Image 1 (cartoon, rainbow, N blue to C red):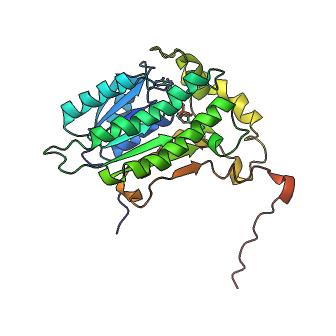
Image 2 (image 1 turned 120 degrees about the vertical axis):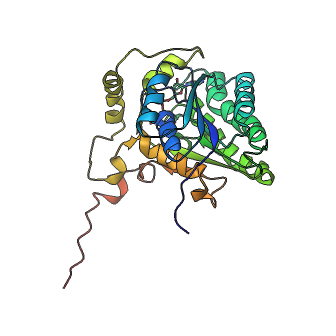
Image 3 (image 1 turned 180 degrees about the vertical axis):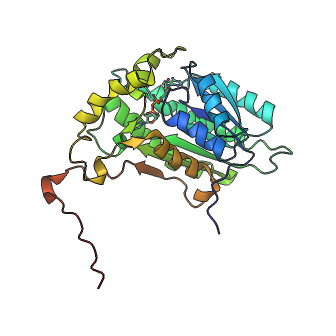
Length: 298
Ligand SMILES: NC(=O)c1ccc[n+]([C@@H]2O[C@H](COP(=O)([O-])OP(=O)(O)OC[C@H]3O[C@@H](n4cnc5c(N)ncnc54)[C@H](O)[C@@H]3O)[C@@H](O)[C@H]2O)c1
């Protein structure tokens, strides 16, 4: 059977997609390239939706991209948007949850933005996915939640962020079981350190209001370099695990999980960190790891 990463004719929603460069944004572009019919790109940051629509168009895709203001911590707003999508298109097929809030002292806000939002995706996204129509005769769907490498190691982030992402892993496991009789899969992707606008956007998005970013992409990228250096990603670059992930690479995993190419994967959170967590103690125990010597061809 050939590899088939196609979302032809499907309609869905991507949260955290209003960023100038980030995982949600890359997902919209790649889902459109995979043939999606309509994508609702949601965020509190509404200033980059026009550029995103243009970027999708430039790829040659005729996917309809709608920018939508959505505070993902609001159950009411989430349900209202899902109803609008199903009424407009007669179907709902994928829900990719990608938003994030800064490492907060505010436990409640962290849990509501990063965990409750994923619960709403399961609770209400699934109900939209089982609506059938001429366009979509059978219930089906894929929910992809964003966890984090912080759910796999205690030292990546603060307590609220780490706990909220561990809860996301639990939602993936339990959600996959609870939705298994409805032909809906639930999976997660846990990015490692990824080049996005996260440190800038999270600060700005904290209070849940609509906003726009004035800085250029270059300025935003500059805001983040200190963090990657501090995390050790600029050292010992010969090790594969010290590479920085690109948003497009994480989006590849999201599109795979949303497509039938991953039909056998359900209830799993894929750690996409190039091996950084597996190498947590770096050279401390193994010493320097030598490069493999080439096979001699005699
Ligand atoms: N970038 C990384 O290194 C990294 C590592 C691990 C996990 N993640 C996870 O990846 C996901 C995507 O983040 P990113 O790195 O692409 O950052 P990003 O800044 O590109 O995107 C995050 C978006 O979430 C939006 N957002 C924040 N609060 C919101 C709310 N209440 N309602 C709606 N939108 C809201 C922001 O406005 C922003 O546009 C997050 O869940 C994050 O925790 C990122």
